[in-house]
Image (cartoon, rainbow, N blue to C red; front, side, top):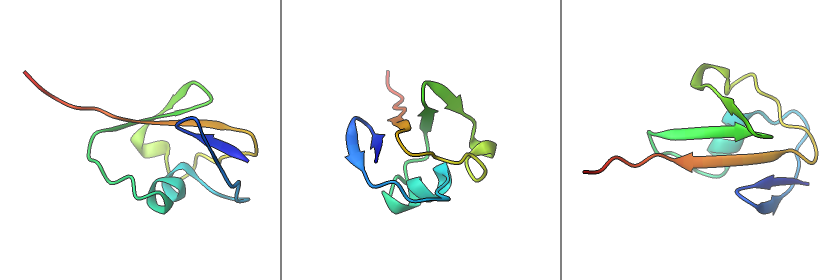
Length: 65
């Protein structure tokens, strides 16, 4: 089991951040991803493996004035 934005989600062996984003339909252009408190850069998403019991935060950045 993993946590995604404080909600339990099934752990899938071999899942990367990119697969998680696609599976959960996170399609916003301005996303910040934290894996166990560490920011994952856009270019790292396809290689960043998620392990059982990991905590993932997906944060949508909004611009305003």
